[in-house]
Amino acid sequence: MVSGPLRSLAAAAAVVVAAARTPVVVVPGDGSNILEGRLNKPSTVSWKCDKTSDWFRLWLDVADLLAVPECWVDNMRLVLDEETGQSHNSEGVETRVPAFGDTYALDCLQPSLCTATTAFKKMTDALVEEGYVRNETLLGAPYDFRHAPFSPSGKAYQADLKNLIERGVRHSGEKALLISHSMGGLQVLHFLSQQSQAWKDAHIQQWIPISAPFGGANEAMRLFVSGDNEGLPANPLTHRIAQRTYETNFWLLPNPNFHDDSPMVTSPTKNFTSQNFSEFFDAIGYPSGKRIYE
Image 1 (spheres, rainbow, N blue to C red):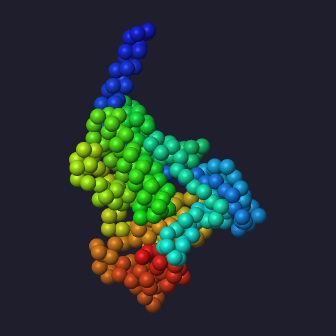
Image 2 (spheres, rainbow, N blue to C red):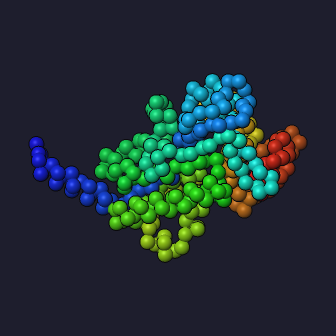
Image 3 (cartoon, rainbow, N blue to C red):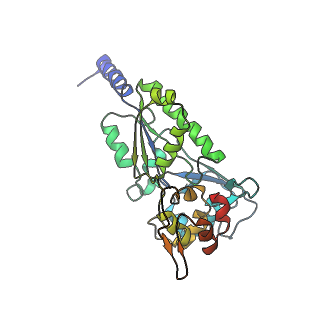
């Protein structure tokens, strides 16, 4: 048994060892972290919906999503400002991502149902077992996955990500290892493209993008057509109402610079490819999509 001063020395040594580790920064993908909301709405779409609330988990609360989907859609959807081309929350809806820097928001999407809604917990638990410390050498960079980096929310996230990486490097004395998944790969690619080579040389050891849709994803076109219930026992068309408004779902569309005119969506009268998105949005009855895509 280690006791007294020896225990303190052992604890101090453990801190030194952890600090010397390469800091790991995890950037999740679309819908892979918690999003919280607070309400002060002038009206609601249904008598079932709350007009006011303190902060609550907007994504993900399975029971709430299934019980009052129309309320969830109205709270999650974005509204396009036709003049500026920017999208924002519905009136009276405020959103935030909790615990930036920690892995809490991306370990489990619904902590009370962690086993069923695990996102990164198995990976972060394994790193902790190897000696990493959450919010010190193991850092989480969750974000509002509805917004692309070009929006005010996206720009703020990119600045926060830079500060987080710099904090990890200062704490450990080592360059950072970035791990991204899916759309997180596009977030990191955009982020790194905005940094100077000198900054990257000083702060980034390596980047591991997992399943990054660098050329876009055909699945995004299916989402615009029929929605995506993301594995939940819910009507995908309900999800579609909100999903069609997310900037990032347009960002995920197949990049016309990397795809030819091969059909990606077919109908009895026309094929749709990465080269005719304008016609595609008209055909699915969502002409506003053309403005957001631009």
